[in-house]
Image (cartoon, rainbow, N blue to C red; front, side):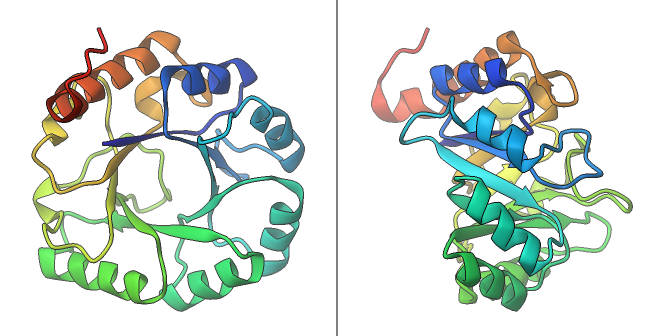
Length: 223
């Protein structure tokens, strides 16, 4: 089980995440978000990220020229398209900056069905996505709401590795043990306030994931 901590704004927080063994760290490049950072802030934060920790740039409907500028100025590894981007648009933008990419799908429990979620994943797989992220739908927000969707809408035969987001924390992440997912993504569940992480919550989240998912596989004790 892979873990991505997202929405960093503080250097000390990103250092802690790396020390705790997070597989990926996410930075938000979407100005309306309370967790948004500039390219200048991102460069400072990423000095604390060691090799083998993946840096994910979260963007929302970012124009091509802005994405090119971002890629030229910030050393990120993967683009997370978190807006209304189509499969073709994601493919085009990622190709321009020569980056791997994932797409966030906002799952609406009231209108989505298992078949429709599977079909959307298939479309992004065909366009070259590396993974798909499933988050809860909100009418006015693109993410970071702390809400959960109906996990029965997660397909067991996904064409892409699934990253689960939305309302996760140290207390409930163990409930994902039987889900057909590759990783988990958390932001609000490890925070004191938006953009500021809580070391104890980050540590508890990692311990919960490792005890409940990894120990059964590796036999490694993380207590």
